[in-house]
Length: 350
Ligand SMILES: Cc1ncc(COP(=O)(O)O)c(C=O)c1O
Image (cartoon, rainbow, N blue to C red):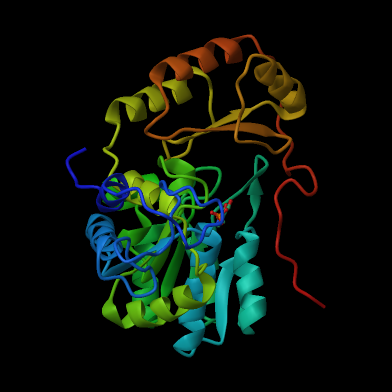
């Protein structure tokens, strides 16, 4: 690792002290609170400021904010930024994460649903025309990029559309934290506001995420949002892990091995190396049980596919082991639609 890890260095350099402060376990260690030497996330001036500045530089943002409450708090903060700058409605695909619809409901933002058809049981990304039609009726556009199945919207065309219409583009990159090495696929190359779910595809602790603004104009309302939707007791282990994860080096060898694996084992084609999607159809449950008996756990089983989530920390040997086990398992044809309830979908409230 070439970069300095400001938060981890601070935690390592701590002197043993007597704790008359939270947390109640009283065991000074990595799990400390905001103290004189550990900085304050709400108005950072020390290690947290340095970490956030480095993260913004790496992600190509004007400002980035550490989150210890998952991408969910980033989605709330971004939608708040839209609301605070006068948006009354947001166009969002019907298979967006529930946090999008929850935030809109909480803020009284209207939702213009962007239709997504299903192809071989997978919700397709909205086409340019579908996004364009919805944006015409809304003040902003929010898309998920990449989605859980490793697919991307047409980011270049859609960001040009939003610029042309002078309407903000917000990207939910809960599954794309590992893509800042690949500008053509990275949310931060296109969006005014975006969230990176660092804990999902990079080596951060669960709930570690970053929300970013491309310009100072967006940084101000976003800061107002994170101030409201972030915990007032941020976890130092999570924050240190987010800094570590964003600075974690690219693993191109594994990326190539993942692409070769996809070809060898008949994975569904997608543009995201980190998501291996294997069609098992009616044999999904049996395949999952068999794999779990061998100590191998997939990310999800939607009744059509088993999805295996990689990160730069996945070992090539583990990928090989997965391949060996998969070779013996019978596949099945996938249904056109995912089984009811497998993928939550937005329905307009009556
Ligand atoms: C597309 C998408 N956005 C946002 C979230 C929320 O992320 P988190 O669980 O980190 O709060 C998820 C969670 O799975 C997600 O899939």
